[in-house]
Image 1 (cartoon, rainbow over the protein chains, first blue to last red):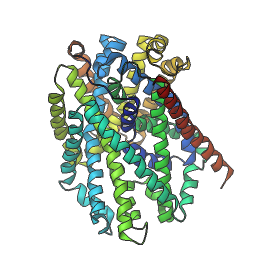
Image 2: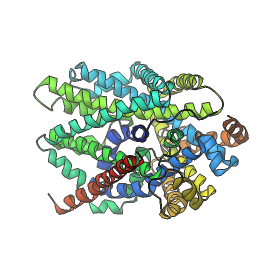
Image 3: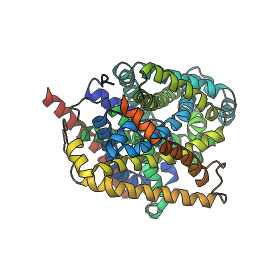
Image 4: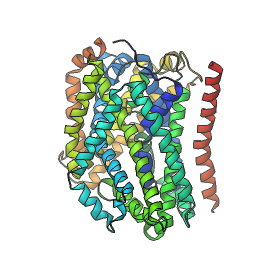
Length: 487
Length: 35
């Protein structure tokens, strides 16, 4: 298949890739993880892992996608060798499995935006009951379908007419909204207590292994590094487009948005309810929904004396969250569609099939929070394996050869030094192994039946589901590689 | 504000926002030079 779709400019590429990275993880998950891991102390390992996990993997993904011009299966086959196409298939599967429930989250955001703007969100005194009524109804399923329909329509229109155009609206709008919210949040009385908590380190936490592990996971989740999504968008980079400078912009840009979102959340929560602020941020309700969908609506009702002002701020917050979710969702839809396009199907057929499959297979997550939580656990941790497979591909190719020929090749604005070789060959695998082993071992501590595959969050359910997926792809490796490389 | 809070703000925000501004201005410069 001839390459005939490209991002129209560097800025189109950067904004779209920023759309991958900036999502609900920045706005929703980041603040909760910071609060649970010692506030300012967490930020120190978090910055370190931006430099030694996220940026090197983003560089690698840009390079693999640009040089191979294939989705994950073909890309890994061409980089690591045809015996390893199954790794690319696993990367694609993890992103797809996350997409199934991420669209549910996008649906929640859209629904809450609608509730905020029509004032319904402030017609209840009990937000936990409001959330429970919503989440146990048919509405999460309906909004899951709506979110997928919006995302699929954008992806259907292609790269420059669909994905790029959409992100050129979604991402700047999201950033403007966050700046408005930041100004308002910082102007609230007592907001500074939140800022102080956010940035004050308690150095004892730095000796807690879990803080470092949570900082690594948050970076892995938050930047999108190692998911295969950036690799997919890189397929549509122009030949003379730079890799390293763009990768740095994405990594630092994403983390900057997290800082801004953290300042908004902590200022608002401390300003409006300092007494139980920390408990509300850290003990966050079913499937981590509490802070965003239960507690923040309560706070928005107190942001001023005027209902119209409260409605305004609540609406733009949930609009920002919706934009963040949709811009990430479309990248997951594109990755899955691209994988099918590589098998020889048209974009139209690929997108429609992906949309239908996602609606069906995402429905259990929309209707059952335990299933949602299980999938979030299994495939969230599975992302670490995806990152390992990306790094493995570069190691198999030869890190120095990869750096010289591809990263520093045609069009590079800045040259990446030999530090990259050491990080990709040693540090990234080390981080991944340490993280995975700790994660799985510690799950035995909270679940005596750690091996039971039918429990919600333990090693057993991860190993069981990963095992089925990996065994299938390894078994069909020759077939999937042949199909992916043929077109 | 405690000194350690101020230092954390300066270091973390300095690296993140400083890095972002640095890379962004570099990208702008390269784009201008290409034209």
